[in-house]
Length: 68
Image (cartoon, rainbow, N blue to C red):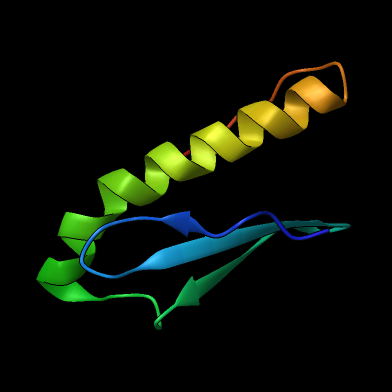
């Protein structure tokens, strides 16, 4: 099941979906690159963390994210 769209900044939004292999992220518009990505990423990380916390809570557990 897909999440609600999370509004980021600069007109971007992202939708998350839990899959058997992990998490699928659907960007609108297409995922930014370069300096624009640097501006958007803190908002993406906050939205991702909020969504993962809700997913973990609904399963009665916790989530671990390892950023590379």
